[in-house]
Image (cartoon, rainbow, N blue to C red; front, side, top):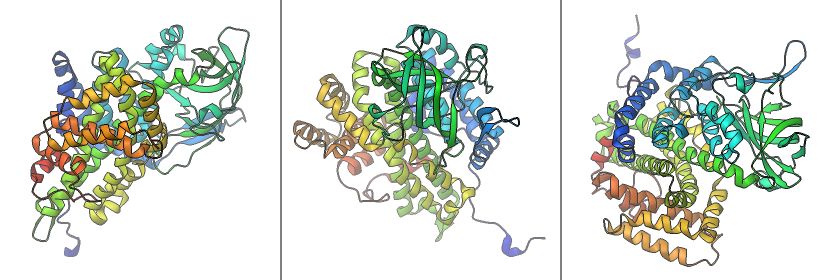
Length: 544
């Protein structure tokens, strides 16, 4: 019989057995806003099914197991043959299979596919973010391959398949495949034009032999990889299949797996090419232009992944505060805790709203929307991913000491939170990319200004922020040195304009007062006390 001192009281129950999609009001409303009404019933059914799966105790346990049992490199088999395989825990394969079957690699092949996939990505990230990497790479490979119609015809049906096949064998024998990517090298990092990997043309047109290395190769267990190498005509994009058509393994030597801060369920590798067979994608010397479509799509996934992590962090904080009592009442009813939770909820909703708006631009596909994405994607990637870590830290603190313990799940969220800011180009890379768009592509700035202009006149603080932004944009003196400040404002003004147009008045009012009006401190929980913070927190509560 347990001692009376071990009777457990005043603890929040686990946040399980709920519909992660329908519990997120901002996400549901964004889907309703951006999808054709004729698609909504089917989309809601699919997303609710994924939401229930994501919220189930069993699938959440898979996420824990995949994270606690990171992948292992097997360079040789028992006989000494080089195999270069990565061994994963069964829970990893279960999660990846669920993600593929839920359509997280199939956006390009269905109406409204990008909005539906974006919502699903936000939901699925909340289970275990590590498996988002191969799902993202596979999804993003499609626009790069479309520069070569023959390659696209061959690979796209497999890339957009909803069948997960983990076996390593020739791609033409598989119903579905996964893709990885290798761009950076030791000596250059983000400066991919400094790459030294060489591509020597072979006799068959469009085929090459690669010699070199990749310092970061995402998802090394994949069926194919898009990589950059120096061909005779300059930096070029190549497709490297993992297994050749005759069933032999391509030369793809995995030197080691990275020992990472977070994202531990996923494998990131250093690989060597030595006579590796590859097919050219696009023209020689056009490697960056060819692969940029893939990069843009993965950058959007960085935004969506961060939005998912923030949503889960906020959900855990609000859930805990709903049940935990201290100083004579529930935490959620305490004015100071309510201020903190509302502040976190604003950041989460702004990220979700922006991410789904960008996904809708992909579905639209028009010239105006493509121009808008040229500025909006790197700006959103810069800002939303940087907000993820402070949100995770503050949400963890809402759980107190409980949040610092691994079993709460909050440390895993915290370790994962910086990844999306680093992946696909860190902050300075994104800021400089926005500057290039501003200086070289006037249509991009016009499209952005037209988008934020749709909310003009609805909130004086937003109007003032737009005016100040225009003043900054008119002054190009020393613009590189202040690029981060400028890109931050571009992103926050865009978030504010979307919330003013689409969010409840209490959410838009609080966001504009704090993020645009300057009535905000240097930490969360410093919103003006006169706002309707209770409604903001209630909207964020994970109840479906």
